[in-house]
Length: 125
Picture 1 (spheres, one colour):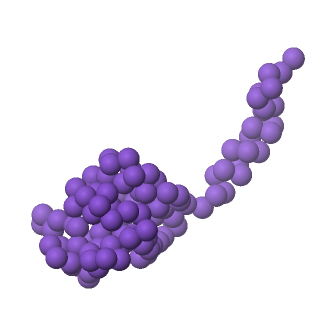
Picture 2: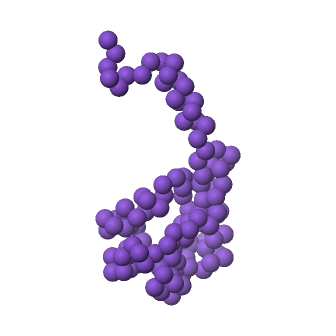
């Protein structure tokens, strides 16, 4: 007798194929402090549910960027917006890590989110 959660092999194969068909998107995001206008720019290999994940990290005090974390704690979630600046289908990219770095360089050069304008630190070249 099969267990309650056991799936037969043909159904499992069907589900795996459906999962492979789900498109994932890599891309660049911007978090904006609505009070100060400061922005944070970053790239991720998978944007699915990324805002939810970032909010959770910020709410728990575990976000990597100390300046953004500090302002989030002081001002609260309602003082910030999230925006996807650019996205690409990840399954069409052979080197996602390299592509994310190139995309990040582009957006950092364009937006200059440093010092009074943002939370990012300039990239070492």
